[in-house]
Image 1 (cartoon, rainbow, N blue to C red):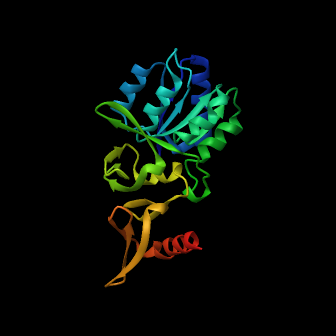
Image 2: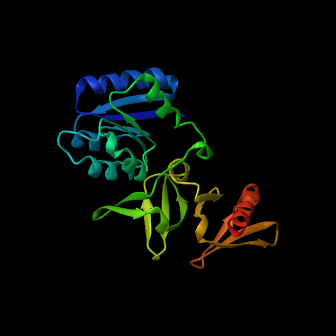
Image 3: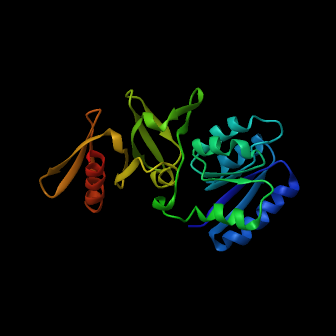
Length: 238
């Protein structure tokens, strides 16, 4: 699918270089590219267009880089950080960025990051430990270990937490798959389940299956995913 890209960078020359290189790399895969030099500009674009990818500088006009990161990773779009703050790369990955491109960067390194957009979730070694959720209070940060499962909800995802709370994330399930660790399994087209929330797999009438979870919830399992889910359960028990 064609991507709409937002570059959030306050140095005009750097923004133009990123824009030029992403156009060269993505080609027809890029539908539109926009630049924002401030948070206000970025917010206006995000509220106007369905952005698929954000390329974000952490040092933006004196703003707190990680406050920005928490904010943008809660959005529907994937986020790739392009920053000289390499000492904080691991922390950035923990917040669910798709990749971290250190400055100064080459076209080859940027291409490697952009290629992750098209890689399958199985080929991604995610280090995400926390997810940001937009709420009426601002941004809530939740440890992924506190999430039992996600349910697809139109263009969003609904997370059910261990404490019984539910939160809506801006990313649909297929984008969450790209940033979540292998601890989460796609049990059904509409569900991503934390492996350690699974109690057992039950066979029902009509060749149907469902997972019983630690909170008492029952989650359907797609027929094409049954063997994979069963193998994960057996591996965990061994």
